Image 1 (cartoon, one colour):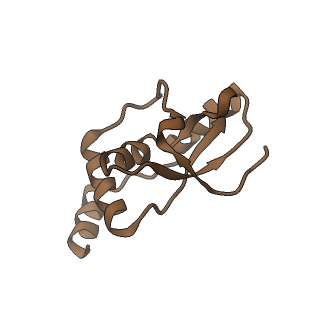
Image 2 (cartoon, rainbow, N blue to C red):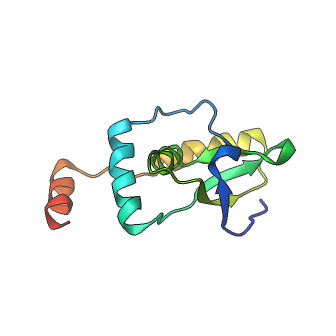
Length: 112
């Protein structure tokens, strides 16, 4: 896998496409709030398409949050991936995410 440095990519060049997990608009609002205050902490992941556009591999909620904020571009890692590699990275991105327990979420929100 060839990794290109993190770069800012115009949002209008990103094809979000069909996602394995639907975008939760409440979660997007939460991410947007964080991104507005702290900036984007984690780049999205893309793969290049013909014609200078990109397909989203991972980061649909971050893309939606950036769009909600009116950003015109977003930090991304661009990787050369075939269809299977891209699908597996999307699956792994969602599988390895550790959801907070209700107690942890409440603790973190109170501390924030």
